[in-house]
Each structure stands twice: as C-alpha cells, then as structure tokens.
Amino acid sequence: MKTPFITKEQAQKIIAQYPTPFHIYDEKGIRENARNLMKAFSWNKGFREYFAVKATPNPYILKILKEEGCGVDCSSLTELMMSDACGFSGSDIMFSSNVTPEADMKKAAQLGAYINLDDFTHIEFLEKLCGLPDTIFCRFNPGGHFEIETQIMDNPGDAKYGFTREQLFEGFRILKAKGVKHFGLHSFLASNTLSNAYYPKLARILFNLAVELKKETGADIKYINLSGGVGVSYLPDKPQNDIFAIGEGVRKAFEDILVPAGMGDVAIFTELGRYMLAPYGHLVTTCVHQKHIYKEYIGVDACACNLMRPAMYDAYHHITVLGKENAPCDHKYDVTGGLCENNDKFAKDRMLPEIEIGDILVIHDTGAHGFSMGYNYNGKLRSAELLLKTDGSVQLIRRAETPSDYFSTFDFSGIMDKYLDKK
Ligand SMILES: *Cc1c(COP(=O)(O)O)cnc(C)c1O
View 1 (cartoon, helix red, strand yellow):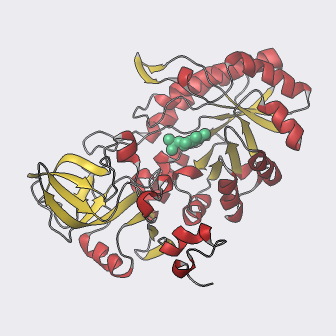
View 2 (cartoon, rainbow, N blue to C red):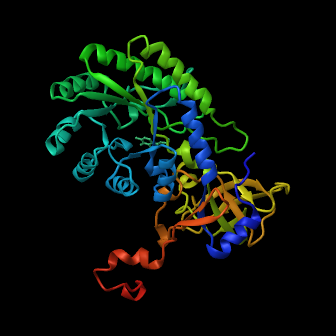
View 3 (cartoon, protein in one colour):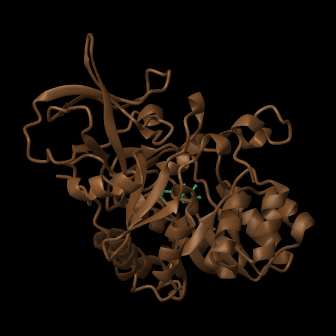
C-alpha cells in the first residue's frame, strides 16, 4: 500500500495558489527517515551521511538535511556552489565526481571538501592543479559482477568509475610518498538495491581491502564511504529496506574485520540520495484530457520533463487518484504527458479508478532523481517545488519556470526580447 502524504482537500487548497504540475516534499517524513538512518549507524562514532545533492538539488532540502546532521555529496561545480551557499564547508562536503573539470576540482579544493578521486590519473591532475590535501579518498571498482547470494546485482566490470585493485595499491603508495596523511576508501557497486544485504556485503569488501591496504602500504585509513545505492521500493506490494537491519549488518562486518585489525576507529560514511528523499516527494498533476482509441489514455499536465524515470528506465511509479483512494481499480489506462514522444507515459496498462477530467493524480516516490532529472524538451517548462512543512503549511521552495526563463539564454541577441521579462 502506498498512501499519499496529502489529501484531496489539501491538494485543492495548494493548487488554488500553485497550479499543477508541481513536486511537493514532506518535511516530516524526510526528518524522521534521516533520524532513523543516524540511529541505525549510531554504533559508529564517526558516522556521517553525505546526501547526494544530484538527487534533489534544492537549497531548502539541503538545509533540512543539514539540520539533521548530514553533509553533502557533490559531483559538479554548481552542486558545490549550492552547498557552499547553504553553509556546508570543509569536511561537510564530499566531492565524488568523475571526468572532473578543472574548475570543479579547484572549487572543491577551495572549499576544503573531502576529495574522492575517481581515477589513478586524477592523482597527478589534482596535484598539478591544487596540490594534494592531507586527506584523500579513492574510489574502488572491483570489476566483474557484483552478486549477493548468487544473484547478480550489477556489473562493475562495465562501469566507468573507480580505480582497479592494482591501481588502488599503487595509488595509495604514491599518495603516501607525496605526503598525504589520511585516507578514505569509497565504492558504489549497485544502484537502487532492495536488499538488506547490499551495504553489509559492500562493507565486507571495503573493510577487507582497507586491512590489506593498510598492511601493504602503511596508509592511515580513517574513513570508509559506502556511497549510495540503498534503494526504495517503488512498487506498492514490495517491502522496503530495513535500515536498522542494514546498519546492524554493517556493524557485524565492522566487528568481524576492522576491529580485530586494530581499525575500530574507522568512520563510516554514506552518500545516500534516493533512500533519503524518494518516498518523501510527490509529483502532483491534473487530468486535462481523455482519449479513447485503441487504448484508453489519461492526459495529464505533467510530462516526462518533470519526471524522466518512467520514460528513461521504464520505471514503475505508483499513482493515486486523490479522493478515489478507496474506489475500485477497474479501469485500465495509459497515463501520459504531452511530449511528442511515445515514451512519455507515467503508467502503461495501469488499473486505476475511473478518472475524470479535473481529477488530481499523485505520482509517488518522486523525491529523488525526479525534478533533478528534468529537462526542457518540446519547450516544456520546469515545475515548481513545494515543501509541506512539519506544521502543515506549504512553502514554495522553487518557483515554476516561465517562458522568459526558457528564452533567457538568448538575452544577448535581442531576438526573443518580446518574450523576455523586463529586468
Ligand atoms: C548517484 C550517486 C549517489 C547517490 O545514489 P542513490 O542511488 O541516490 O543513493 C551517491 N554517490 C555517488 C558518487 C553517486 O554518483
């Protein structure tokens, strides 16, 4: 069962002020979930979550997470700028980027962020550009397939990220010889996992590697970053991950491997994005058309530009028709946006209650990798983002784009001045 965090009455009130489509986030849910994560890892003294900014790059969201004790994981110049403006600095920031531009690397160094190198060649790149800091993280890619209990979870051998095992040993030796004092180890081996075994399995790989690296290179490994990848269940009938079981599984690995090696003071970091935000966002949209041809279509005022996951990954997102929560799902629909692209469908052959024009639909689990993957194809404009605050009030946390925003990069030319808002 998936229940929206807003009712039809609430939605109607909000829409009177902020027309659909919009993304709305649930502050209460975000905070409770963040607190549970902290609790699940409270056994580790240095534990910290670095929220993956790319999942929901909005300063108001970052500030809520900051209040809950999170840092930020950035991978680009603008993500660094947003984090800086929100008051994150130094060790509050993890810079896990790849194919890193010089300007981005310089900004990360200037902010004193933890720099997580994606590649062996980035050692020299960073040294020449900014000099080497006291603490460096390196990203590990073990290659091959990543399996949990013989089930293939993902294919690191085909992924562009990280150092090979050999490069990691060589890299640590070089970095140590060049004066780097402290090390962190990072790896991201499977995305959107629905298994309490993912983090514990990854932890065992990284913990064993850390013990070996320390033994062979003498490096002082202070941090192990389990990165993102803990998923959420987008399906209504599939159980969610249990963060307490996950924390306990990592603790067990820690006790088995790091403590006996005299590395019991290593701090565990995470860079969760989806897990922190996905369930606490809805895309709210209105049915504006119905169409009856070879199939039954419900046309809504949102489109793939507002939520790309169904079009890009064929991802399932649950849909609730507000006010019809208890009505029988006896109609089969494709729920579509208005792009000139047949993959612009939020749902295919979905059994839903009978939908009328004007009905308000909630598309669930859009709080991460939702708005942020948006784009402007067909000249569609980005929606507003709203925050349902803990006290029940609603705050605009990003206004909707206007045509003037869309045309603003022609402001040098004069051609579009007719449609540009005057400054
Ligand atoms: C995308 C990403 C994350 C977050 O991934 P989720 O699946 O949202 O948890 C964390 N770290 C890095 C380096 C990433 O690229």
